[in-house]
Image: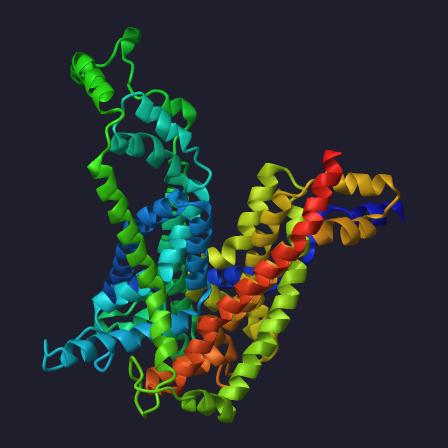
Length: 592
């Protein structure tokens, strides 16, 4: 009996619910998918050879890599200065700007894609404005081309680039830049030689996430791009719907997955350098002397030391007009990025109140006809209720399993903790179309295709990862001595968790549940594969209407989806505010 009790307290047991779901729904099916791609039990590479023997397939593959790479570079060029300017702002302004980025991140992908259709379409905002101003006589072709795809993808992925950069940059000691300036370094030199190397972990994380997620993009390229802008994910989805032979589809999926894994392993190496490396800017040759390639540069710098010393003393207290220009440029740049992230949502919300049969911005008057059309149409209403039902079940299941897993993982050593965390995050770091194909194969074996249960299990795979990340971040600041104190007062493990641990990590649990619900509520690709023709969620119905008929009712749906993350952020802020008194009380008790 004692052994059973000790087993129940084991961290490994706490992770079993989460890993059991992932193993059955995702892990084993991915292995079966790999075997299918090699025609098991015959084991041949004929499916891979067939893929690479078709020039059209190679063209689509290269095009997928190109779009993903260019989108990642664009996100980095916009995201790095944005993150730097946000972390350099005052505390209140920084919090507000991070909230804006989070709102954009949490907003439905479909709603944001629809926003760009309204802006770039033939009868969209830009063309209408140019025609009204008399600058053009016919609409410009701003949509269904590669440029529109880049605009849409960068809008979707920019928050994913900015958030890891902000996380890393906020941990960089800004006094290091001041120290470099005090040693005579110019602002630009101090930034490039001190700040940039320390921020490389954020650059690495952001680039890997954006590139891998772009590889599996399906909705945005299909909605904004032309026939020549198709990505491999579209090709794979068409294969699933057109053929029952999973061999070629599995091969295409693993080719895409192989590219993602190569990028993860290559860029996953620590490129930020170590303190020792940063402290040795010069190479040392044999005998401790400096190498010949470094000697001329070193000699020149030594010769200019007196001049640079006099220049630094002369300009130390001089006001710099260049600094002011950079400050104003940074302010306008940041305003432009926030406008790019938030304005499409404002366009959708405003146009949803259009009174006519066609959407217009700004609306000539206000009308609720499209909202009435949404709530009065049984197909839209039923789809919304289906999404809410699935989202609530997914949030409950993933929150329970994810919280237990995070609590158990936090009790392992650093090496095991990292390995288990990466295993949990696998479904949300792989291309979504590959994850969808693997889950599809697993649920086919279980007979759950075309059922709500199948969709709930499929959504829970990714939702558990979000819960684990958020709850683990909360547990990182949790003081284990509080649990030890409760146990010293003869509280059993369950009482300790319910009375001590749970109240302190409740904001993280609620945050994880919110992310899990939003993840499920906005899912399209996996839902379209698992739901078949029998289950219609709100995003899936919205996506079908966007492809076949641009019903103005979609504007009302998209505006509701855009308001949803704002409501959730308000809820999270309220939960955090309520938890402050208890946290302050615990801190005051510990200080006595």
